[in-house]
Length: 205
Length: 205
Image 1 (cartoon, rainbow over the protein chains, first blue to last red):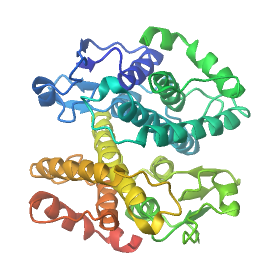
Image 2: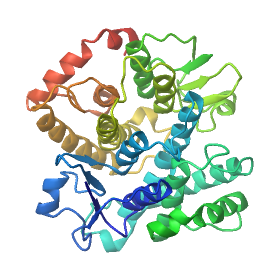
Image 3: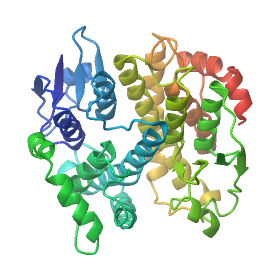
């Protein structure tokens, strides 16, 4: 088994935090996502989307997508549980992970892709999208701050994949001009606690 | 238990197909998403995102988001399995459901939101986004057609949530000017087979 990884990209970081929480070690192959991103002819044969991470199993078959790989490992090594245990907890964890993904991670990514001049050669940039998506992300942060005033973690009392997704999205937000500040006290409290977990240090930035 | 539903919206349809596959019946409350969408003050108290569907459990707590509700029911009534059984199948099903969601459902939705004059009063429309996202969706359809030339369903030999997500996205594409045609023979074959399932008829359009 091996993991195609990229040390500086957000989706690979999400998976590395998840694996560190479970204390799972997988041999890693670092892919250089420099000027071209991962869209080189060689890597497109591994993943036609040109995205990382990709897990290669011992039979040579591959699972692409960070969350799909997380679910593979959650099923093969359930403890510590990061997607919930009871039907209600499973549903609620998926709800908050989806909110973190659809209302924060994707808006932050689109702010970066459409707004950062350093990636203008890699992505078609449509004027106006970066501002539109940044506004969307900021609204989500307002909402998450209110939610986190009433509980420890996004999906409830237990740390979960939803917190990993939100943490990675927020930290990635720096390259899109989005930073936490004192107007979001509950989010700052949560971000400090989650960032202090050993898994986050182990996964790198 | 009750389900806040909207008979003409794609995410509620995805959940209705899923429930029909499992032969689960839940009392439904139809929410009128006419001129205002679901963003009325009354409904925003039920879901601050103003989105459907929402499942209300017997203790009054709620699970929002179509896929989160699907996962709640997959955990409480596993058969027939729609998210996979073995770790590898679970990973692969999530991979293809994520591809169907991120590379098709969301681009189709953004084409609709940013390009359809009938919803200009509900969404901020950024010029250029609809064309950009339509092109993204069409590239995904090219790719899915190639993939489906080699297997029965998106995630493998078994019908899964990934097929439901892709079907709903493609059918929703009509309002965004995206329609299947003879240049995608494998996709047309797959679409015909999936559309003929009793669950799809039971769920309505």
